[in-house]
Length: 121
Image (cartoon, rainbow, N blue to C red):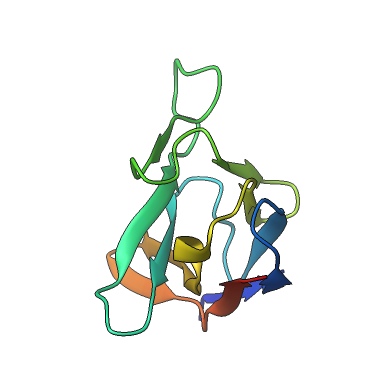
């Protein structure tokens, strides 16, 4: 059974930074693409960032970001620790949401329990 556990959320002032972690257990995730989503109150869950696995011929994983976070958020992975990260800089109040880690592993969709990020002065 695969489990994804997020951590690192909290309350931060506008302009501040947070680093979210998603630790996977039950299976090595090095061969899987991983994604971060978020859901604000009253809004649909949206894709924030994604990172591919390192496939044959690639030097490193490829990443993609929602337009609203480009240049401020960075997704990365440490396969030795079976963990994916989301570095969030220059946070804005509109980044306030519950952030979820997501992966499809062997055709099964897995979500973490979510971690709350609140950006407020």
